[in-house]
Image (cartoon, rainbow, N blue to C red; front, side, top):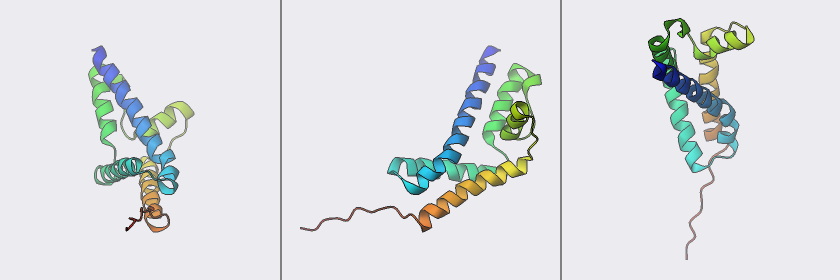
Length: 128
């Protein structure tokens, strides 16, 4: 059914947006944290880190593959989302463990740096 192809593509683009937000958004989170972005980044970072460490993979990859299997089993793949598409577009084989450890490391490091070295500026309450 065509709907599964559309759903797989939606998950694919959401997955890329999620990764780009985590990786490119790290410096923004560290140096110029607004309240709404801090909350989003913490939620995204913790959920990504936990799912990668607990399941040694991403639930979005499983969801994309489930939709691809329903549409056309030949388009499904095993392993990491990032590894699959780096291999497909750049013909470079990257171990999935490197991707997982790198992503978890980026998120963990940005969170630690933001807590230790760039504390959030608190607004001082004016007393009358």
